[in-house]
Amino acid sequence: SKAMVPLIHHWLIIQGQRSMRGLRMNTLGWFDFKSAWFAPPDPE
Image (cartoon, rainbow, N blue to C red; front, side):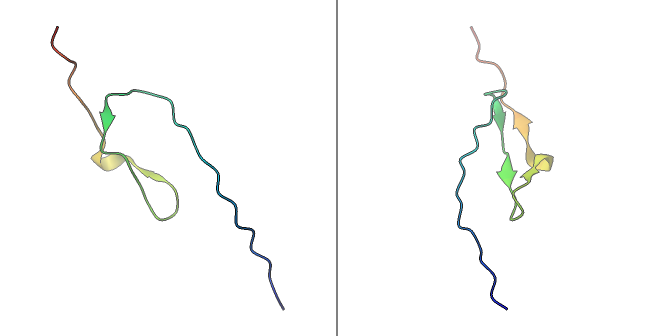
């Protein structure tokens, strides 16, 4: 049997803390939060 595989690309926009760093997406499309960290605030 033949299967049809749709080729769809959808941009995701993530809103949240701009100071978060180190987020990586794995091969399944999930975010890996174990290496995430927050940048220190800018000194004023």
